[in-house]
Image 1: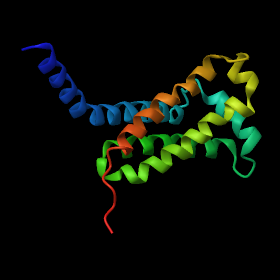
Image 2: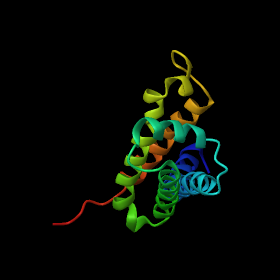
Image 3: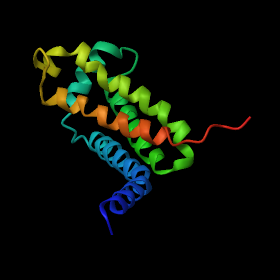
Length: 146
């Protein structure tokens, strides 16, 4: 086997596993982080509370927190099922917008100094990787037929 055939085999292998691996990764992060919130064990709980105090005035925080937590679990579970991709991608985008808000609305929580994120800021910025995985998954969809 030469370098060119090995290269082709690696590429073929990675193409085969990239979609299921991306789905599993997104499922794991969303399900796990949502479950931690449901169990009251999430280290992000205080940041979510501060964000809710600034944005959500029509719903008691405990209710919002549980809805947000179950929303994360739902997104994770939906990513496991390829047929539900068109449904879950918009849900993920809604969640990502919400999750990014502390970068702008809670700068003291998100940033140590200019372009130096706190640990919470890093927690938020890692979502760029999730977005990239989701874009890769969505990019493999076949167009709807008329």
